[in-house]
Image 1: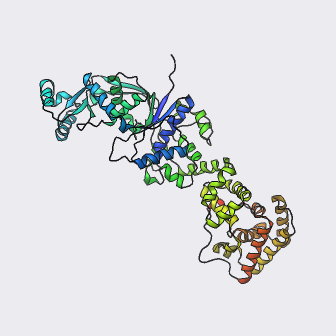
Image 2: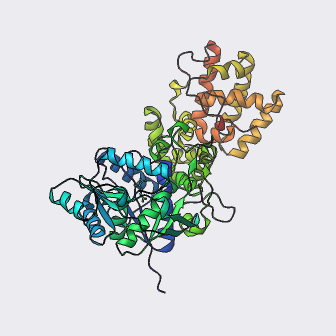
Amino acid sequence: MKSVKPRVRFAPSPTGYLHVGGARTALFNYLFARNQGGDFLLRIEDTDRERSSGDMTNQILDAMQWLGLEVDEPPVHQAYGIERHRADAERLLAGGRAWRCFATQDELAEIRTRLREEGRPLRRSELPGHGGAETAERLAAGEPHALFYSVPDGSTTFDDIVHGPTTVEHAHMDDFVVLRSDGTPVYNLAVVSDDIDMGITHVLRGDDHLSNTPKQILIYEALGAMLPIFGHLPMILGADGKRLSKRHGAASVEAFREEGILPEALVNFLALLGWSPGDDREVMDLPELVEAFSLDRILKKSSVFDPEKLEWLNGRHLQRKSAERLAPVLLELLPGIERERAEAEPERLRAVTDLVKTRARTVESMASQARPFFTPLDRIEYDEKAARKHWKHADETTERLAAVRDVLAGLDDFDHDLLEERLRAAASELGIGAGKLFQPLRLALMGSAESPGIFDVIALLGRERSLERIDRALETLAEGRAGSPDEGPEATSRESAGPSE
Ligand code: GLU
């Protein structure tokens, strides 16, 4: 049999931001389409006029673009298909697969309650005044009515990609609305009508839609269309075992983007929520995921959203990115004066980016580590707590910093290894452990006791800047005014603490 090129779609309702669950559905569809050389389409399900908004549609498009999930055709707007939805409902009617329901909501609710108690499904025969001549009369009188799908006897079975063969007995399925009395189509009809129209071959969506699938299959059959293959993705849970929601913290693509998560990291993370490459790889970018993706490794079990893992992946993707690509992102996050100076020294910015990216998990933490490299001399403020600890005895500190100053002033080459050798030698000459020299020095150079490795810091600051910063620290110590009670430098995150030296 000739294999058909897969065509899949992501079909969000534009009633809110693109959340983790939706983004994961979009991603799995995208990965499958790309892996199979198929098409990935987007359908905006905006039939609910009151809850849908153009703004949200734009947010969704924007979030998908940011994630790199490019679509192959212009997005389809479900609302534009309403005439076709109605025509399909009429076809169901003409083929004897639907009936006109004149009952009011209240009448229906009452009948439904009674039938539920009796353990029987809703059928037209249960409605008084429906059928044959009565229906014709009411129709002629112009009574408003909805169209209901007429569920046949028997059962529906489908082989879900994730959940395996699934059977639903029709005896447990009510006849269901396809067209409301105001002429608007119901979700199940609109989706099927659109999926047929778009030539969708595989429907991959969240398993909250599992119960809709038998109804949709019945509509496909009644319309004489080929069935797509269905796959329902397992739920995403928060750490407390409940379905992931805003209560668990950031849950939208937008929010992660604002938190400094890279699109590569979010895509990687989402891919591993309910799927695995079948080997021990974890850090993968979009092309690698495309290459490795296959539907048969989608897990049946719900997956738990682990923010720690997302941060970890973010760190790994930061390391994979070149300084050229990261530097502009970092620049954006620097405050005005530091940004200006960094912009004027692109070489140094790249080198600083390379240094800080190896130890950061977010771009924010990269920026806070990079910032002191570009702070103008007269704006350096010394972290009070660190000053109390590492500059406790002004005389002793002065002696140590002066010793470092001598070493640096005598060096032409600010090479990492050479600096290490000379400064360690200076510490032994003073008869102190290296840390006792390097922590006060770190504070003098960076204004805080946390920074990348001290030799890297000195090498990157360069001779002139290192010396003038030490001089300023010496002056501050002489005046006894270390620490700035008003505004200390922004707290650096734990991961930026210097390595043991
Ligand atoms: N619009 C539906 C939703 O937002 C998806 C429908 C589908 O994928 O069939 O959940």
